[in-house]
Length: 502
Image (tube, rainbow, N blue to C red; front, side, top):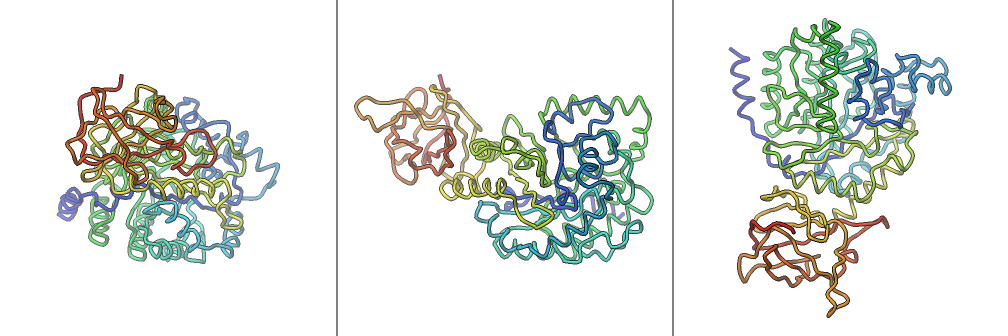
C-alpha cells in the first residue's frame, strides 16, 4: 500500500551533509503581529512553560502570539492594546504589514545573513495567525485574501540562494487561528486546538504548493500535523522525492484521536503538570519525539552532551521570535553569550538557528538585532573554520586548571579548542606570554602543531594535557568591548588522552 511504501522511503532518508555542515542558520518570524510588535518582557519562555497556571500562555513573551494573548481580557497584551490601539481588530495589522513591504530589501537581508556566517535561512511562511507570506492559490474558506500580494517567500528564497545559502520554510501545521480561534492557555489547549474539518486538506494543499513553487531545502513544521500518520508518510515521501536533499524537523507530530482526550479536566491537568516538569528538566522546550524527523529542535534550550542525532538549537535574539519594541537592551543576548552558544551547540553536534524578527511597519531589521549579526560576522570572519563543517570531538568541553572554559570541535586532522577569556597565567621570563594547559589532548609526534590566528605557538606535552605559551589572545580576537572573548587554538596532529584538568 502507498503509505507503507512511503514509510520505508521516509525512514531511509539520511540527514544530508549540507545541513550538518551548516552550524548557523537564520530563522525569520515576520507576521502582521510585527506591526503591533509588543509582548511582556518580565517572563521567559521557561517561566511560562514551567507554570501550572491554566492560562499561563496569556503572558507569552513571543509577539507572534499577540493575537492569542488578546483573547484574554486581563492579559498584559490586552491592556497594552487597549491603550495603544483601542478596539482595532488584529486583522487590520495586515494592511500595515503589506504597506511596509514597499521598503523591503530582500537582497540586503541575504547579504547580511551570509556575512554573519549563516549557511541557511528559514522563513516563517505561515504562523499560527494563518497569514501567508505568499499569494497562495489555496483559498482560505474562513478569511478571503489573508496573505500578501507580494511573493515574500519567492523573493527571499531567490535572494538567499543568490547569496549562496540554502532556503527553507516554516509552516504552522498544528495551529491556524482562522480555523480554530479558541484561547490557548497551556500545552493541553494547543493539542485540542489542532483544527479539524476542512483544515487538514487545506494544510496539505498549502505545503504541497510551497514545495512545488519554492523547493525548500528545509520543511520546518510547528506544534503538530493535522493529518493521521498514514497520510503524513505519503506527504513526506513526496517531499523527499521532490527535494532529495531536503530535511524535515521533529514537529511533524501526526494528529491522533487521542488529542480529543485532552478536553477532559483530569487529563488536561496531568498534561499541564507533565509539560511543566519536562520544561524544568530541559530548561526550555524539546518537543515530543514524532515517528520521523531528520533533526531535533530544542527551543531556548540546549543539551548537556554531544548528541548522536542531528539537532538544532532555536532561539530569538531577545526573549521573543517576532519583533518586540518593548525589549530593552538587557533582554537581548550578549556578545559572549551569543558566540558561546554557537560554539557550545557546534561542539555538541548541533546547529544554531538564530531568529531575526524584522519590524512590520517598514521591513527593517532593528538595530539591536543587526548589531548581533555584526558580532557574528566579525567573530566568524576570524574563526569560522572552527565552526563550519566541523564535527564533535571525543568530548565537547573541558575546563583548565585556571578556570578557562574550552569547547572542542574537529575536522580531519585538526582539533579546534575554543577558549573563553584570555588566559591570565604568566611566565615571569616573558612578560608578554600567557601559559595555558589544554586538558585531555596529547601530540601525536614531531609533526604536531599548535596555531593561533594561523601563527604557530610553542607547546609542551604534560601529564595534564598540552601546555601552550600564547601571546595575549584578545589582541587577535575581534570583539565589541564586552568583557571576555572566545578565542581559538588549532591543534593539528593531536590525539585524545585520558588526562583531565586538575
